[in-house]
Amino acid sequence: MGKINENRLSLVSLAVLGKPVSHSLSPVIHQHFAEQFGRAIDYQKIEIASKEAFIEFIAKSADRYCGFNVTVPYKQTLFDYALEKCEQFSVTAIAEQAKAANTVVYSASEGKPHFVANTDGEGFLKHLAKLAVPVHQQKILILGAGGATMGLLAQFSVLARSADFQGEIYLCNRTAEKAKSIAEHYNIHYWGLAEDEGVDVQFDLVINATAQGLDGSAYQNNHFTKEHIHPKTYFYDLFYQKQENTSFLNYVRKNYPQHPYSDGLGMLIEQAALSYQLWFGDEPTTDLLYAQLRL
Ligand code: NAP
Image: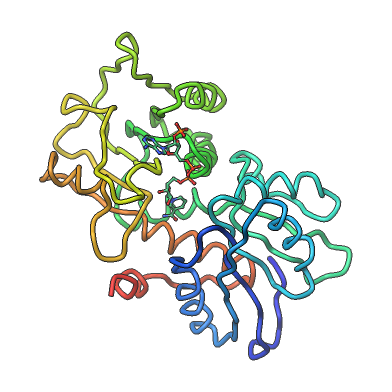
């Protein structure tokens, strides 16, 4: 638990740091949470131009901020910095596994370390639970092997320790070597694109964790075919757009029109709620935000 200011009316400063951040919904989300507890927050969006500037900002902000959310492209930079400054920062086990962090929590107590955490994977699983999409005993395909995938896999590895998980995870990525080494590290299946690397599996859940289509271009599917999809396969895109489908979900709607699907807005909300809880100890409710953020 972070820098709790016992006087809920005194203004607490927070921010999301990244590049770009102008589109970020985090200020609206955290304002909504703060209002649930009668807390006064000033939540800013701060665009930071370079890794060096990011590190300098983190190093100098402990006395002015309660904490930060960190987004693309600095999640790994934050983790590396916290490891390097291990006498000042501790790193949660999940962030350690993911080698990336999305939350900074500055400690209020003199001499007590600040810490960094990664709430992406847990936020994702919370959203799936809300959607009633099962993960236990499921065959799961993850497309992409970037920072978001690392956050998901770190959380899945916690689940995998429970005897009833028995899920099977397959990983595909444009840069095969990256997927291969991550699959090896997590002891999951690697699915390559070469002719002799095909898999004969029908997936229950297909997760798009690539940055493909972020520029609005059409989704190019080089991975799964109709043979890999069964009538109830669920499609989840980590990316989200407020009012329209993402390009991955447009592809899904066109080719698998009867299938259930979701974008990642719920994951964004749930990971934010977990960050809020790390800062203040309060567990916000998220249900109202789902509809509100689509308006
Ligand atoms: P990242 O670290 O930059 O990784 C991007 C991944 O996408 C890499 O695997 C990359 O493949 C792949 N990729 C990029 N362009 C591609 C293309 N044209 N064709 C095929 N693959 C391509 O990004 P990230 O942080 O993992 O984020 C991935 C997605 O998750 C983004 O859409 C992001 O907005 C979303 N996200 C959502 C939430 C949420 O709360 N909803 C949280 C985190 C991330 P290579 O390895 O070959 O480069």
